[in-house]
Image (cartoon, rainbow, N blue to C red; front, side, top):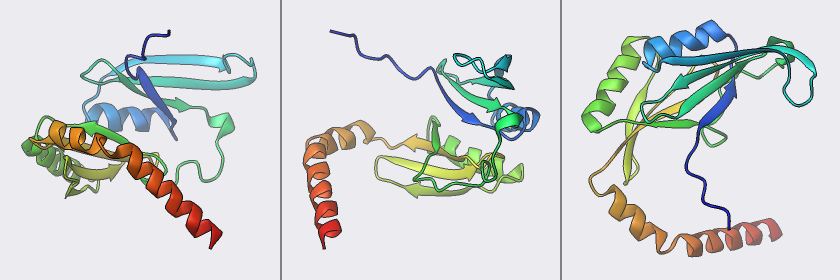
Length: 171
């Protein structure tokens, strides 16, 4: 049997401009630029497509990464998307730190709203210069207990949701 995956090394997204993205993630969010890979061709296919791939180190050792590949940019690539489509949620130590981040972002001219209480976490929301929705969460004291209780009915909840969607489509 294959051993379980141990975590996420990095999540990668397209960026509009490498320096603009570096300034936001390093100077505003405080994530150090750990590496930049520059290539002239796409790995695997060998298709000519000059790009840089930026990696910002998270305190837990994982990374958030971006591709600046100007030759393949399409209209709409950097429009703000709905958070349901995709978003990245960072984690703060506690609610005090969460609120300090909200103040820091707003002070840096990055509109940030919240906190929103989701029961198991409280969150603030903002976006990066590339239109990627971002979130910072802080776990509530009962976080693990709330998730453990939810896990007991999670499969049944999905089954009921799937049945509801099927019935709505049939109607």
